[in-house]
Image (cartoon, rainbow, N blue to C red):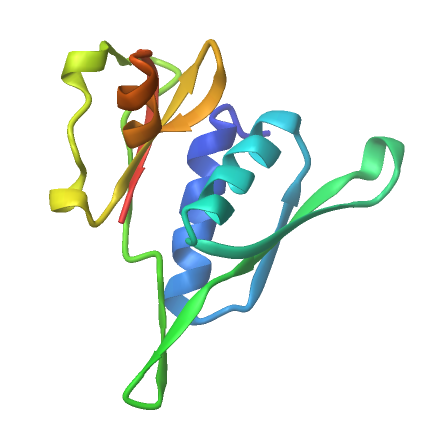
Length: 134
């Protein structure tokens, strides 16, 4: 059993994108589904779907690729977990900065749900910094 479900999820996304897989399947949770929807909104993944019934639900995530010189290149280059189960990191509004000079995103868990760093700054809301993706 994995103790850090979000950490495991983002590492699976990164590893799948490095080897060129089209999609991955992970055990379903509402929190992972919301994170995946935010990644879809930021155009890191192509689609997110919930499959299965009752206890055997899983999340199907299709990765986004772009074609560069007739080779497919993933939109996900790297991920970095910020807040861990052993050490939670919370950010105030004035502590949220752009990731990789605006080329990446910081994903936060806030009282209003899962938000990116830009959305949290606009709404003037802080929260737990989950991970950075670029």
